[in-house]
Every structure is written in structure tokens, then in C-alpha cells.
Image (cartoon, rainbow, N blue to C red; front, side, top):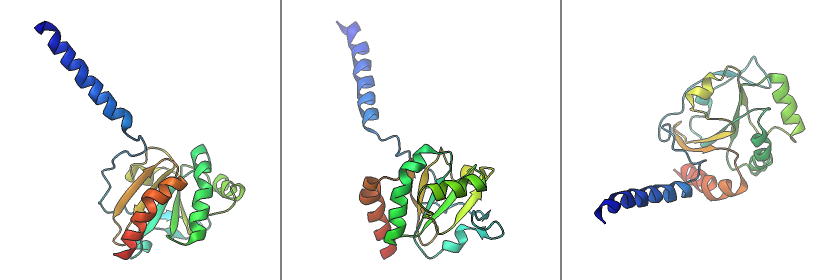
Length: 176
């Protein structure tokens, strides 16, 4: 009887790990950048390549940084949510167009119903995405007044995520 206890114990431990793992949200991957300064960069703007876009310009305000691309199907899913967020005026939204061409990005925004971003930087090489630990697009970062990343969303921003997670945190950070 004792020889069955060890395999049975191991079996129950594995079942326990599986049960915990199945309850986790794969979009909630912990980021080593949370509570750390946002990586600095300077990228040419999508609308005017002679102007540069940099996080330094946003110090003193709470803002969102959304990494997107014209070739990203999930970005199409979140685009209407971002357009509504911009209309609400709750928080400034900036973008990074990731590994894309200027023409395709501009056409994508036009076809998608408009540009929700105050400014978009062109990360053609993907170097800035690497600094931010981008797994894939879309990804969205909530950055506080001091330039510290406070939240990271992997995957599309949905109405539920915006309402239940992001907006309460945005309001809390704006009140500080």
C-alpha cells in the first residue's frame, strides 16, 4: 500500500498545479517593467517624420502608450475602444506603430475610423518594442506622472478591461 502513496501524492500535486494554471489569465503576464521607469526613446512621428516623439514630453501627466501595427488583427478589435477612450478625454493616448510602414499605418488608421492617438512614433526596426518587452501587438502601458510604468496589458484593450482595471487605476494615479 505504501508504494502507491508516493505516485498518488505526486499525481495530486500535479493536478493542483494544473488547476491553478487553468485559472490564470494569459494576458496578465507579469512584466519586469511594472513600477520601473518607462524606457526612453525618440522616434519619428507617423504624421510628420521630421518631428520626434518621446516619453520625456509626457512627464507630469498620466498617459497610455499603445503598441500597434497595421498587420495586427487584434489591433482592429481594440481600435473602436481606443477611439471612444480618446473621445472621453479621460487620459491622453499615444501610440507606437511597430514594425510597419508609414503608408500602411496611415491607411490602416484611415480605414479604421480615425486616429485615436495624440502622436504615434514609428518603431520600424522594433528596437523600442524590445526595450518595452513587447511580446506581440497590441500591448498597452499605463505610465504615471513620474514616467513609471504602472500597468501593462497584453492583447486588445476591451471595454471590460478598460472599465474594470485601467480606468480605476488611471483615476487613482491622476489624483496623486
